[in-house]
Image (tube, rainbow, N blue to C red):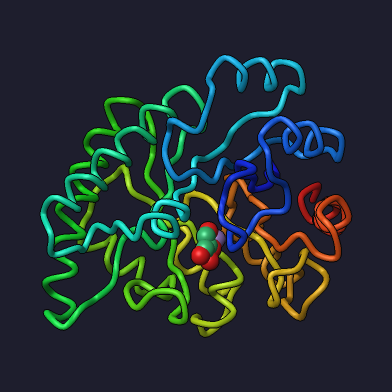
Length: 269
Ligand code: LER
Ligand code: MN
């Protein structure tokens, strides 16, 4: 199984959950530590110089496994559920740019908090606006051979699609073959009944997994039971990517090293 680490630009907000910042530095560090790929956390596709990125990937033999979009919401507040149709048009444009980029680098685009909030109009209105945009983007992404990944995010960050159970229920309803879930075990620790058992139960909807311990430190440095998670994923026959999305503590290189050293034995199984 393949392991990636989330990285971002040197200009990203301090709140971005990444270990390394600055694309060149990050890719070189990830390669030196033995990661198979990187997940690019972007606010728009224009942040990437394609030629420079390709040269770095050629040099390191790393792959970009996903473009993640938490920075879209963090930097602009744009969301699929916004009542303002011009803002919804803007978010469509940004995500289409990310999908175009993923056609060359990444193969997946995630939808995190940009999916939006449930406001005073209630869940049905939010869901209707969300479904219209995600389906349009999923149709567009098919033509580019890119998949969409919906990430359930805990209630303290967003009030819409918090648990894997809720994500799976919504995907069943939407029934679009080009949308899968991106469970993040940090959020699952807050929202789901069990982590490993829920991953196994919803495995048909799962396309990619974010790894962090219960405190967003490197796996192995909190109280999440990774033995249980990987046993369930083995039973499920999960073959997709894992990406480490952790805080740069105690310092970036040490955190990234702690993560890969702890995870390697599970991934080799
Ligand atoms: C993004 O992948 C994530 O997990 C969120 O917690 C960021 O807000
Ligand atoms: Mn995540």
